[in-house]
Image 1 (tube, rainbow, N blue to C red):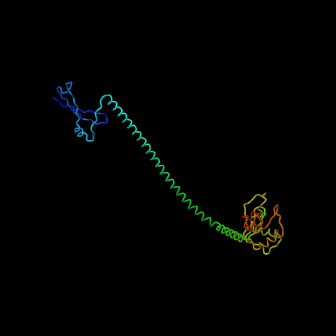
Image 2 (cartoon, rainbow, N blue to C red):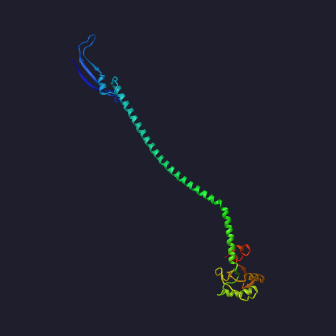
Image 3 (cartoon, rainbow, N blue to C red):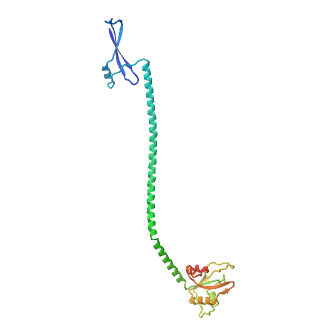
Length: 272
């Protein structure tokens, strides 16, 4: 009598479980057999395998014994190595990703700096162009400045032509009334007697009071004398007039530039 017994056998960790149907039957002595007893046959039903696992291929003969254990151990080691390699690759990819992010941020910063530098260069170019256009008209402006300076000097000389400059009068010698003192001094400087008497609009010192030992006392300037040209001519013809330890002289009140050009720059008060 035969009995049926189904069991599952796993070939390896990477193989599917294969259902086997073991048929045990007792039989008598079969013809042409030398021994009689219990014979066990294992029948593999491909139909059952395909129904339970459609993707599985027909199972190969199952290995058993020490060889199967060795194959399982090698398969586990290979899987562990593969997992370790995958983890290492993941770490390297993560590191590369962080570096790419840093490079992207640095690239953005560099682009911003380049844009700012481009704006500065453009601004500098515009300013340089403007300066170049201004330099092109500089010679013309220089000629205009020289003309205006000459005109200003001429106007200054014209405004001073009625003035007489006195140099060398000691400090405080004139007292309180400077105009009265000049009326008394002019006959001595020129050797002339004035009738009617000279009239001065005003007279004043042109520099602060200096010490008595100063070699160049501050000067006096009288404004709007009516006959200053004759006074100057007579003063030069009469010669220097000595007052105490100084020589008193008279000169026309010109601008500083004209006084220097005429060689009278030794009279510093004329350039005031």
